[in-house]
Image (cartoon, rainbow, N blue to C red; front, side, top):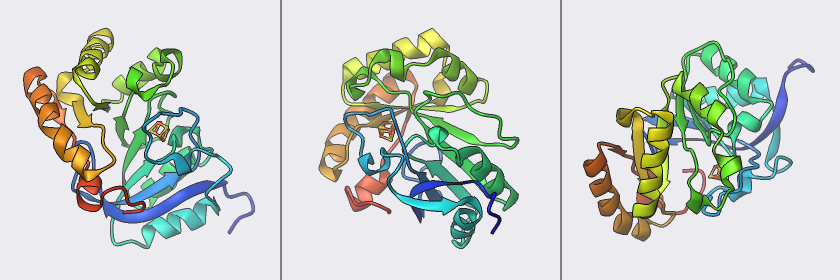
Length: 224
Ligand code: SF4
């Protein structure tokens, strides 16, 4: 281990299936980087907010830990992973180890150059997140992700949220075929209750539906 190896903090590393988005159901190693300054009211990973919490890792050990699982798809998430100093070196190292890479981000920071193909899953926050618009909507970042052919995953609870998605889609010319609506729910019963209405909104507007398979299967449990 080099003393110059990039280091940072990680909330957890685990092997599961992608629960959300365009690749829902695919086996994947999750690397949850520590730290998020966005502060969504309904966040289900508040333990990942404090950048000083979690555990210290260096890059080589972290990539070894991910590569020990029998899977070469990685989901780099957070927290807000783009706020972590480990983010770019981690993506490069995972790529060198043969991982296909997805990133879950709030879109508050523009996509950095990582020099390899990445599936960007951008979940721009709506007013219901409780985050100020000037914080959660970053036009330059959104345009940067548009240029990267990102997926746009919106967490919705009601028609007002869907109307907000339509306005954002129009303002930034987001391609409908790349927009997914996902019910806001951290409990299985809420997910089941809200999903049919969200499916109807998807059918109405030509959006895709994003499940929350991990909530459906395991409820609010962590690390699954
Ligand atoms: S951006 Fe993600 S990790 Fe950060 S508060 Fe919002 S939902 Fe939670």
